[in-house]
Length: 256
Ligand SMILES: Nc1ncnc2c1ncn2[C@@H]1O[C@H](COP(=O)(O)OP(=O)(O)O)[C@@H](O)[C@H]1O
Ligand SMILES: [Mg+2]
Image 1 (cartoon, protein in one colour):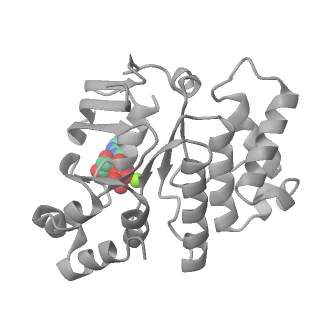
Image 2 (image 1 turned 60 degrees about the vertical axis):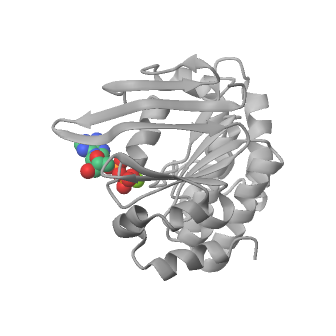
């Protein structure tokens, strides 16, 4: 299908005896925001690491833009147009905001072809896009957690991805910062045309912004559908969401 940017087929990743990702299959449509949720340890970050080539899966296939990228090295996958933000942000503290973002540009889609000047230009644009323009020349160590999370997005965007994987980009932020970041994620999707998979525990946020949700539990996909469908799925409520009335409240906020 021409509309599908990423297709996962029975992806399995083991760590010794532990099956961290267990026969997971789903597709991502070009242009959508897909939410990936589930309890801690469900395999979300591991799945991101398989998609980006950090880990080679023991089973299954990862198809990106119609190309089988299963087991390809991470730098080649980055060049094909996939970028990821890290759950634990670790910028180079003794480098400036702009320099940190430049790393994304130098090792992204145009890795090996982009010059320093151009990388600086792309990085500058992305740093401004996320709202860190005034801090471009500050050391990363001087940033707040919120700003570090924005820098992480700027670095990933500087790679000029077609598919962006956000790993808990909202974790640890206060409600105002969450609203701001949601606005930014929407702009990345709508204005830049970047397809997004977001791993998120902030339920009202992901339920509001994502068109579809996939739920992982002990490495297995237990549900997939619209936020409404997933929030009403008894298996999801038992495994993750808990109180059903709470789950429904997430959905009611949609579009509000
Ligand atoms: N590098 C690793 N070595 C061994 N076990 C790991 C490794 N990374 C993750 N795991 C295990 O795999 C499971 C899934 O972890 P993870 O993908 O981080 O979950 P999530 O991101 O959904 O919280 C957990 O049981 C975790 O302890
Ligand atoms: Mg994780």
